[in-house]
Length: 163
Image (cartoon, rainbow, N blue to C red; front, top):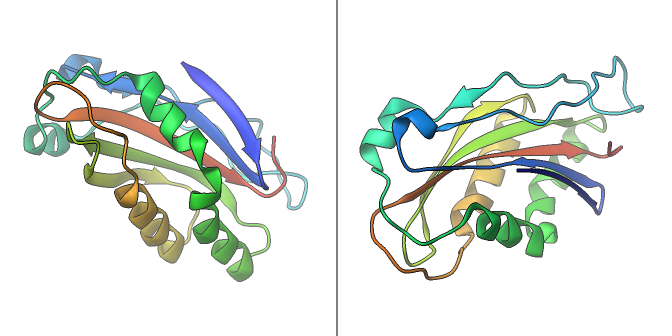
């Protein structure tokens, strides 16, 4: 499932993959048109398909939660302003800041995030990467039935010029 939502200067390309077996742990990133200069749009091209790293899957084995990928998407989209401050700070450092960040996320049945790890980032801003990871770690996805971890590969696109 892929959706694109633009809110408050923040564009998210959301491509989700609920993972239950190592073989199913992949997702293609939403394609975007590369743009060669700022401020016309993001200065990056599409990501290649990625899989969750083996060390992530081994440390956070998938369980049998009744959580759905759509619920993860809805949680992120419910409060996009919560994820805006790290991007605003990045824009303060670089007015043309844009890019994609791909997270591997392990969610507990309580809805708490056990681990959020950046798999790939094109933001070229270590401070942004740390700050957005902290925001993802603070996200609660709500209680669900089941046990173990719910694993998801969740890419986000940040662009002040939206597309």
